[in-house]
Length: 104
Ligand SMILES: [Zn+2]
Ligand SMILES: [Zn+2]
Image (tube, rainbow, N blue to C red; front, side):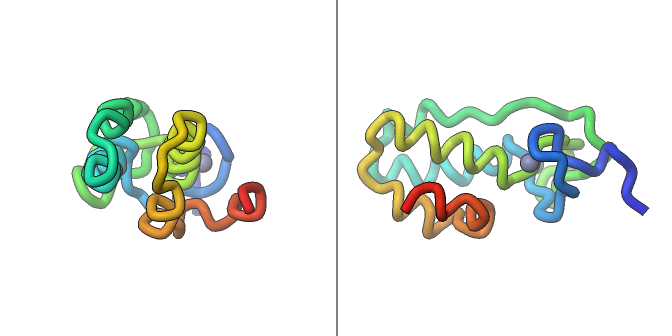
């Protein structure tokens, strides 16, 4: 039922939350800019539109799952000493749940 193109290019999981990195980056920038507008500028979507999964928000094709993209951004925030990583997690934790044990 699932073609290989429905899988994330990074973790190889079937993409179950089809929100593309561009749309996620937009949401994340809003959340992060409340705390640190400079940090928000560093959050950029990745254009990987070669997948067969379609973003539920913008209908763009996508091949990187929300989980992997959220994790990349979360790690960037931690590396830059962003002061509200827990707040970030609480907003986006459904993407990051599987990795939480690595951070606590
Ligand atoms: Zn992934
Ligand atoms: Zn989108």
